[in-house]
Image 1 (spheres, helix red, strand yellow):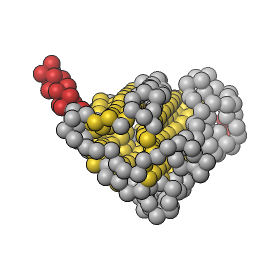
Image 2 (cartoon, one colour):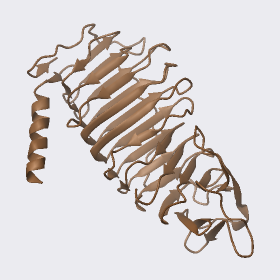
Image 3 (cartoon, one colour):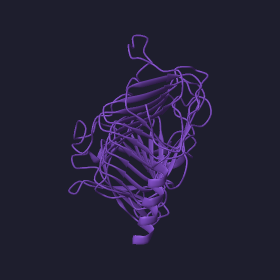
Length: 363
């Protein structure tokens, strides 16, 4: 194991020798050659790239405290593709990373692959969603979020958010979804929060990909939804904000309401809602104070391209007993404005791309 870690450290060190270091505020517009070995943005400065369709980082990305890395499209014709290529590279963010293609009708592709992802700052990935299938993927073997992560679309599409790569991911921070579907592909650990916003879904795949009970899923909107794979061992999920018609459901129809079977059971003492499909059950700790007469079994429409399940879910026709956001969750802030995208911006700009060389380059 020590040899493995040493080899990884050596590989990351070699990759960093090709890095470009940004040491002053830099704005670049139009098509530029951003096919570079790696990026280091020094604390307190930013690099803002505007209307460059393809941005590929072949090395690691390091964003210092108080700094920012912005890739933006201000045109409805320029969709963004941002890639971190190479399985041995890493992302370390202590500032702001914002990939903003909200104004472009072309679906963006954000495919960030590497050995390590660690976010202690703020990170925003956004696209339109009305045309094509956006890709928003942060796949690292060692994956930790202690900060803020936002995935945003103007319109719900068939695209999904992918986090991690088989090994467990740790979320001790805040993840926000808006017009998005997060499809679990790795076990989820940590005591953070996933806020499921408007027209958004969290899809829990199966018990082999465990989901920590310490993780809070906050259903913020009446159109928020949770879908759990029924064909798996029973788990208990911590859910806040259940009410006003948002949805908790399974991948199979719930039982009929008969003398022998029940589609769901709400334990008023423990605050646990249990959904039943055959002999299969999944538990949701929604809290106490719910009126049993206001639960309703419905056809589960999870949005996007996720299949509708007849009689597959439960809604609550009333407000959540506990009003407001839970303590574990942070507000889902809007996209930051990238330097240079406003007509009133007074920052200086550069029209040429930073050079690439075998030694670290500073701007």
